[in-house]
Image (cartoon, rainbow, N blue to C red; front, side, top):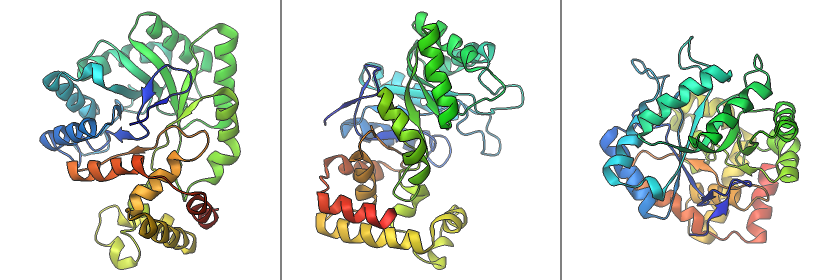
Length: 316
């Protein structure tokens, strides 16, 4: 599988990143292990998680996903074979949140312990913390890189102004710079990223690993009516945002392209992201090994100029 460099980090990743948000939530430990096995067996190598996964589940305290990944790394002996990306800054609880230096230096130790590793390949600011100067956050990351605990840093859910401010601060003070951005981006959710953030990414050669590449499952084609929405716990939210004229137009184009390529709608939707200039690799999660195998087939799809035009026009 052809790997792509993430920004200027030196990290080489496959064109599909495995999302770890389901580990310990909708996928128990045994299932998560099988998902991770299938992903690596299929040529994948980058796994994305966060210290806040899965704090939204009743009874969870955060770190559940990292803990499962750490157990898998130890039991399988695969640490040198994978790129581990995790995040800091989401509100795990009222005392543990944000991007202040002392908190980052404390939080990273918890992630390292749960992941059972002495370094993190990509450590990401999970979301912007407007109460903290970008210089303070970057100073913390500089210390972690110097100590060998972090190889590269990335940002998630930043707007263009704060990202530009961070890039300028890194250059001015000699701090590590954000080598990647994790934004919301898919065939439906395009405009904001393409208009504001993409030009900045391309100007500075920053990698892009978007989340929600399948629009919360809508782009798999399984939600086409109110009846379909009722079959899933997340259907209500999906329908409210995506089940409209624009969404149905995109599904129609996905149907046509997937029929020509003898592929699934999900594979085509992910392949479309992979084919976009400036995009490194979409993040997708799976709740079974079979799903992982199907999603990885997206990396083998070659979309023609006609395919890309049809999908682009439907989603514009």
